[in-house]
Image (cartoon, rainbow, N blue to C red; front, side, top):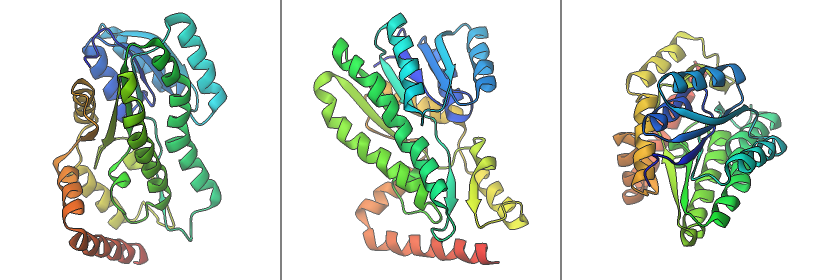
Length: 278
C-alpha cells in the first residue's frame, strides 16, 4: 500500500522512530494523525511537518496506556475524518533490570505502554477500518527483544514478545479484510531512549557503562533508516520488517542453529553480569 493520500496514525511521533516516520510519511504525501505523551515536542514535530509542506489533520498529546484518552482521540478523528488507512504503533518505553531488582510498578508500566498501549490503539482504530471495507495496514514496532532472550530485558521482552504474538494472530485475522500487518523488529537505533533507558541496579553513569553506550551508538542505525524500512514494509505488505542486517541474520541463525544460539546467549549474559558486578 502506498501511503500517498492515505490517512496515517503514528503514535510516539514526538521523537526517535516516531518522529522520523512522521517526516518520511509526510514527504510521501500521507495525511498524518499524530500522538505522543509529550505535547511540546509533538507540537514541534507538527510544525516541522507543516513547514516542509506536509499535512497533519489531527494531533493530540496523551498516554496510550490510558484507554479512555485513546478512545476520546479516536472518536474525534472518526467523527471528523471517518476511518483511517494506516495505523502505526511506534510509541514505547524501555525498562531493563534483573528480576530480583525490578519492582511490580516497573513491570506494570512497561506492559501498560508497550503492550496495552498498542492494544488500546488497535481496539479503537481497527474495527472502524474493518467496517469501512477499504483495507489498510497495521504496523506494530516491537524490538530485537521480541526475538532474542537478551540479558536484563525480562520486563521489556515480556511486553515486546506479547506484541509479537498479537501481531502474529492479527496477521491472519485481518487478512480477510484486506488489512496487512507489519511487525518491525529494530536492533540498535540511535534514539533518545539510548540515554533515557532505565537499568535498575546499574549506575549508568559509570565509565564502563558510558563506553557500552558509545559502542551501541557506533553500530546503531538512524531513526530515518528505520522509518524508511517501516514504509517499505507497508508498501510491500511485508510482515517481518528488519531494520538492520545483524538482526535479520541473528533471527535466521536462531531458527537454524538452536544450540549455538543458546551458547552465544549464555556467553552474552555472563559477560554483562560480570560487567554489572564490577
